[in-house]
Length: 256
View 1 (cartoon, rainbow, N blue to C red):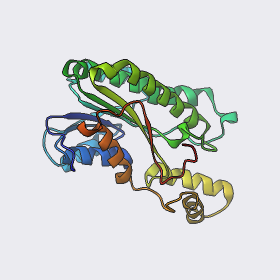
View 2: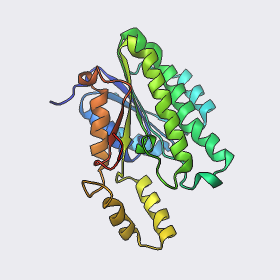
View 3: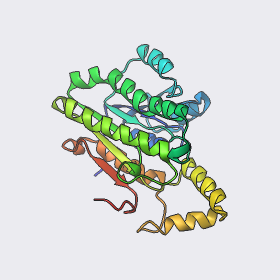
């Protein structure tokens, strides 16, 4: 059954590439008016031209600049029914050597920015008694991933924020859920593979083969496969699902 997003407006962060870009295309294909958010205005202008349908818009902002984000949102009409919170993860590295600034930047980019975005769209969602909030985070909220110390910490904070929010706003028919991508063919995965191969001395191809071997399906996901999980949770049909963490990881995460 195709999902119908006619008369819905969606705000999609991290839309310039990877999963966010795929989500934007799927929502627009379903009839939604999509506002795409990322740092580069030229990329976003090009993206809204290629999205199916009409009425699309963009917001060019660095989510770590939370003051600028608040300033932009105060002059925008925030009548969005769907909010997709998504941003690139912090740099890889062990938690034992992480810098204070790494934590602060990541916390602003993910937790604080998500909160600012939700508070901006909340009045419309509450008035209309309909809202969908989907956070794209990581399977690390179920099982920490080695050498992603700051990311593991911040992603878990987003998951806790989202669960708390789901308990507060459910009475207004607003659902809040998290999608947890596993290994997904995105620029982020390419960067992680390169860094891992440098540490191990293996080639990128050998490292990729080793990682695929840890996945029961023996392959990486496409961005579109993860995006389908996001779009389902944004749909009318998912109206009784809230407060969950949905792994889209080919079965790799070992926990229930």
